[in-house]
Length: 279
Image (tube, rainbow, N blue to C red):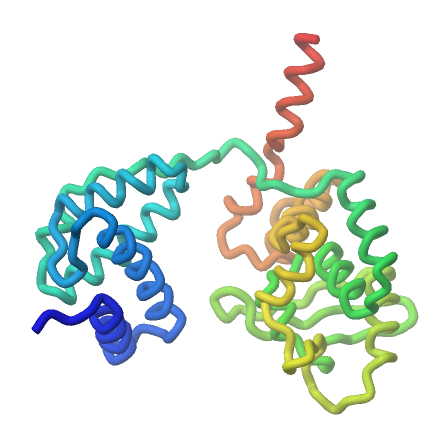
């Protein structure tokens, strides 16, 4: 008896967890396959018995929709795992995909002075002491959002003249300490003074320790992605002549070539140069 696509995808999700995949990875695979199954139903396909034609057509469909090469590559990866589970590796062989084009000579998107000032002004006007502290922490320490959310109050060391953040579990489980500038200390202290609980987490939401998704939501209201604040931190250091090796240490980069990206021109800078030369 043919199973519904919901049953098939659920069985696949459970099998991935039993095979050692994390709940998040299994859930991501299932979500991707749900979209694939929905598309198949509109083209008379069947998730129980997909063909190579189905896979190629879906990948082409995503490309025509304007999906990024990275997104398409992740979709293909999930379908490939599903094909292996079905013991149908033939359906993902020789699939044509969009190429991922890496802009190695362009610095990651960061905030310019006006954008940064607007963000700081807007978040301060909203008056949420926790959100103000989060923005200053990200802008002036360059922490990854996951690192920020994992901080406990005991990871912060502050005195009147200096402070530091002790990141216990950075990327690759590497610890590091990052200086905490005066403005970040000021707003963090104001936030901590509002706390009357005994929860060890540095930043809380109504449900408990704040999550990366919640931080993304907070900054999304200002049209900002959290990564942009980390990029701004690194860009500011490089622009002010800080040695690349020092920036790499502060940012927790294991590969110094990642840090060197911040010495490259940004897309906006390239546009300004062209406008100035040809205007």
